[in-house]
Length: 217
Length: 219
Image (cartoon, rainbow over all chains, first blue to last red):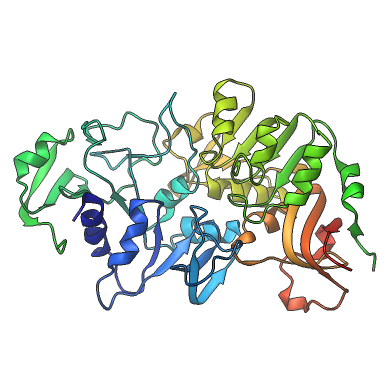
């Protein structure tokens, strides 16, 4: 299993039956493929609907997901405008949002929308999502492509949100943001705590109930 | 009731160099492409664009970036159109990035006669720079000001001749908000019917805010 699939499978365990969920583009989108049995969630798409589903049949030019890709909708789906879409997001009507990250830190700060001088795609709906969703999960590979740590003492890139992250899931472990600091709650099979800390800049509090990362087989 | 249908040539009468335009659409879905074609053909210059994103170089409002007809863009996302980033870095075009929900609310305020909106989105980020902060019941908010335009160019699936509009699926996005927030509103529609053929409860944007309709379909 590759790292992204491991992460997506573990994040899926965080979702509860009946939740309204917003999944970011890329890895977070994969979470929908691994929902546990008996867990039905409603997917929200910030371009203006709830009831996002897999593309079933021919693509419709007027039906795309928030990444602009053709998608499907489930029976009972509802379409609306961008104001309603973000009323749902900002107003606390979205239970969980899953986003990617460039950097996350011990205080739950998240940076994922720009790299000064290199890449400025814009924040899109990410700042509203991290502000308004009841639970914010960052799903990302543990280290950057060059091997540098992404879980930091303090984010260096411009922030998407301050103190907004609840949980970080990587292929090496699960980390919870608490008032005391960042708690390592689970480690991946075949990985020990030293392996994780060596690849993490942030100070980690090792949970007394440290577990192996759940259900990623 | 007045028939609001005009030709695409008549629509160009509302184009002016230096105007501020709002254009509906999300990654080119729900963008009035025929009106974008007209802006390009007419070589309207120095426009300020308010839109969710800058589409793609060859699709949606992104074509106005490539044709260098914009002096400023206010949008939430420019990543799908590399030309926007290039012109921004070269300081050839001013780009103001706004969180998508804040952009929607700023446009809504502009159309609703409101002086702004208070939102927590952007607190603790560069978005708060230069903005007034207010604390309400212990929660900190940014004051985000309304946006209006000289001209809104929107896209609907169906209209009657009075301008009552129905949108199609995710092509709705910013269109209904922008229909409220400009001095002149022109809707490109895919289907045009007589007044009375759309049921009152099915109308998504009331025709009273839509000035003109461009319909290129048959008959």
